[in-house]
Length: 282
Image 1 (cartoon, rainbow, N blue to C red):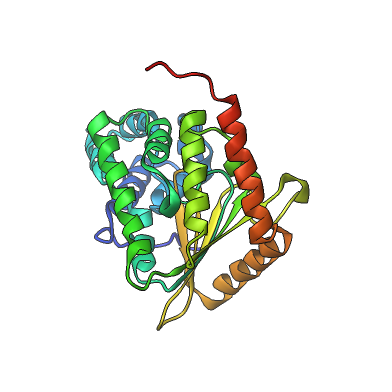
Image 2: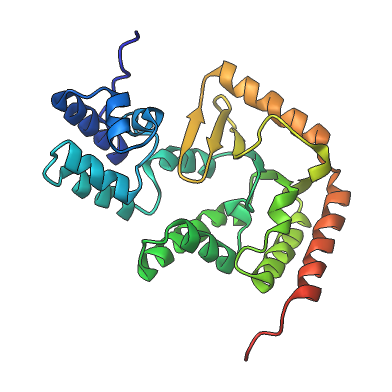
């Protein structure tokens, strides 16, 4: 059996949490599977917590603290992690994103953060972080909107987005918010540095189902890939991994509609939200 991956606890709060959790588990005499059974939760999730790749939900963390007799240490660490506007697992990606000259993105469920309107971003964050206060949500919204200044630079990067059809069909925040969001996507797609393609449902299965993929290119240095789900992300930096994700993206582009046809379908969805939107009180 391979030795467990060693983490640098000073690298991030998530790494510190993972190191602490593993020490407490070993001290208590549990395997990952045994600890998972006590919660109960899949032992693979315990592994992700210990690798710093995922932060447990609050109730799971409280049980871990109790079972491992951590005397509140895990609760305290969890609180600090959740107070950070950008999660540890996303911070390195955000740094890469700021200096990229080309971004290739695929999203399965939501509009990419760089193209989100404020009401759309707020609706997403409220549903994904129900325990956060209003002030905490507003801090996250401001952080997300601040990232969009990348596209307002004198020489912005090329942003090429492939959106799954689900992205334009689900009324996040309600029909009025969704109509405004799709109008913004259309407006950005008319700029020379933003290209949008749509991947229709009828194309069936594809290599990147269930999450999102971003490929970043730079003036100097190798490309990187970033794979993200709703509560975790992973940065791929080896040439072999990046090449595999680049091939997956090529296959997505081959399945997606051409940009002009994509914008026609997005406009149609936007107009459908307009026709179906109920009258809102003044």
